[in-house]
Structures are given as C-alpha cells and as structure tokens.
Amino acid sequence: MSHSSLTRPNPVVLSFAPKARSASNARLHSRVGELQSRGFEVLRSTTLRDLYKLASEHLKPDAPAMVLLSREHEENCTAATYLRTLYPNVGIVVIADSKNDETLAQILQSGADYYCLRDSATPLLVAILFRLLWRMGDAAKPLARPASAPAVQLPKQAEHAWSLQEQAWVLVSPEGVNIPLTTGERAFLTALLAAPEKRATHQQLIDAVNGVYAQDAPPTHPGRLGVLISRMRKKFSEHGIDMPLRSVHNWGYMFTGVV
Image 1 (tube, rainbow, N blue to C red):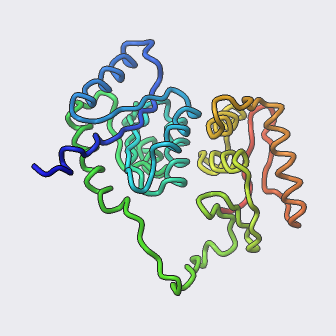
Image 2 (spheres, rainbow, N blue to C red):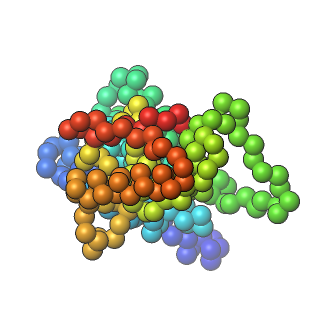
Image 3 (tube, one colour):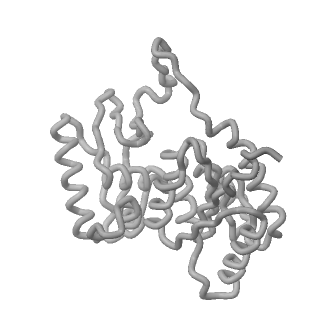
C-alpha cells in the first residue's frame, strides 16, 4: 500500500437535514452514523445558512465533496440549484419524500445528480455516493483554457435573455449590460431564479441571503430585504435598465424576465 493511500482523507459529505424530532428524522440521523462507519466524513447542517457556509469552506476544486439534501422539497431544490450554480462539479444527492414523477423531475432539473427515496436502504445511497466520488475524481479537475481560446458564443435562443455569469457575481441583461452583484444580491437572485416559475416567498429569499453571510452578521428580515431590493432597483436604474422584479402581495417576489 502506498503512502498516499494511507494519508488520503475520507470523502466529505455535507448533510442538509432537519433536526431529529421525529422517528423519520431520527432515521436520517442514524443514516449519518452508517455513512461515517463506511468511511465518509459527514458534516451536518440544519439551515440553508449553515449549509452555504459549509459549502464555502469545503467545496474546493482540489478537495471534492458531495452534498446530501434531506429537507423539504422546496428547500432541497433551492439548495441544489444554488450549489450547482456556484460549484458546478459538486455531487448532489436528494432524499425524496415522494415518488411523484413531477416532483422527481424537479429534483433533477434543480441540479441534483441522483435522488433516493427516504425509505431506500443505506447501501444504495453508499453506492451512489461512491459513484459520484469516482466521477468527481476527473470532473473536479479544472480544465486549462488557453489564453487564445475564442469567447463562448451564446445559443441564439439565449441572446435576448437574462443570465447569471462569472459564478453568479454578474447579472447580464438581454442587451448585454453587465450588472455586478453584492453577496446579498447574488444570493437573492440565485434563489429567485432557482425557484419554480421564478417565484419565491419572502422567507425563502431571506433564508438565502442570511445563508451567505457569516454567523455574526445581522440577520436579514423583511424590512432589510426591502432595503436590498430598493438598492438593486437603484443600481439597475443607474445602468439604464428596468429591474424585472414584481412583488407578489403578502407572499414574495417573482422574476419577470426571460432567463
């Protein structure tokens, strides 16, 4: 056995799961112990904020990690799309509560690689995680781009659409105007564009914004969310663009542009 195999760290799994308050949730936590007994290092989180903090610390190109999402369906999809946007090579597995085809399709469309039903046996989940680990062995290696490589051309159908670029730090308008985003604006727009029909509740957006800041930062609340949006509208206006955002009364917001 080589020295490198002796010092190789255990594969990391970021677990996003509810607190153990019921029999089904307790089973999820016992599954964590089973994964650990099979050689995985499991790092737990119970909020989007904690998950995004773990992701920023552990999802590195030279240290691939996987994510196991076991919360409610909407939270799982929001987290999957957010993580897929920021960390394209991450392996994502969602624990699904429903066998409904539409629900399972939404999980995959959100950016997950695989799903398991909540009552699936742990060996199946282990096999999926090892499969992802094998795939990430090559996929996680960044490809060198020659300095003379031509710019990537957008598909024709995307030429007149809004898009998040530069790892979601820049929002590009249909006219090609680049709008730089702050950390909070980036989290807000990533969560909004990841939501079904590009509609999200106030609380979902607040959780997304809170999730990207350090634990000691003042938490965002509905009033502060309004301030963030007001500043975004001003920024868009300074770029000569109307912000494609509509308030849904007493519920949340909707992105009205084509993406």
